[in-house]
Length: 297
Ligand SMILES: [Zn+2]
Image (cartoon, rainbow, N blue to C red; front, side):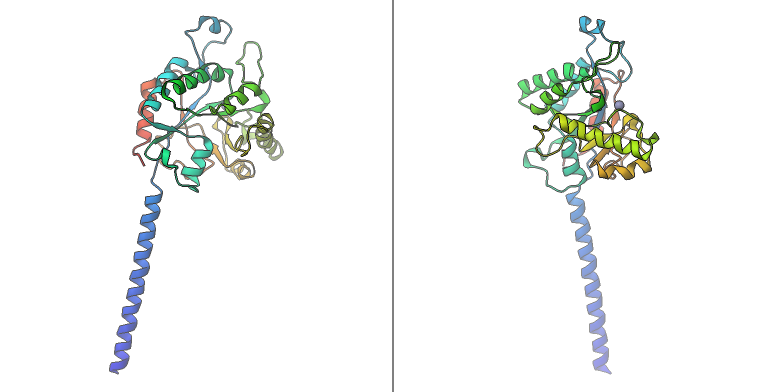
């Protein structure tokens, strides 16, 4: 009897011990996972065309400013602030590898720096004319290469219709890419609302949106990073469209408000962006960048 009671005690001790061990193991695994994945919210800004109303000659030939435009001088203030304050300008592949997939550790030179991403939709010439000189200036002053993400519709590359907004040519894009300033990604082939297309046209928009950009940069893009990511025209996305995306792209960008959406980066095909318009001041942009990045990591 005594022997069997002892065996029972031993069994119960062992069961409790193994249960405790399992629980402790689970706890430590959870804690280490949490330590490895700090909840970083990356501020991603969505610009369109960049204008310079101080240049009267240029303004003569352009259409009047629209709400999605942004002033060159204000953009200069904002980018200058980010460089001086040690922000890390992410490419779309950086965001994917280090913050979404987390397949590689953050390189030592970027640890402790605050991540940010600056994007421009539609591939307007105003980006090449007005943003590129800012990026060159900042590189000259601070020895810091600022990378921007340009979401381009290859159907409009180099298209310059009278009384409309001119678009960057393949040569413009190649120049910015070769010099390390442009991260060239897809905005669909011809700026269609993807949610309204039948399956065949949808797949064509996704496929040509990527392949035509890669044709343009074929000898420069050894790692096939061009067109690996997409920003949806009009920010339009449905669950049906989402099912086709993994066949063509690694991530997809919306055009909404990150600050009120803490679930950022949970779904790689619903990455939030902060829309920027003509009335947004550089100070507001700085505040948005600072509040969206609560901690260094
Ligand atoms: Zn667009």
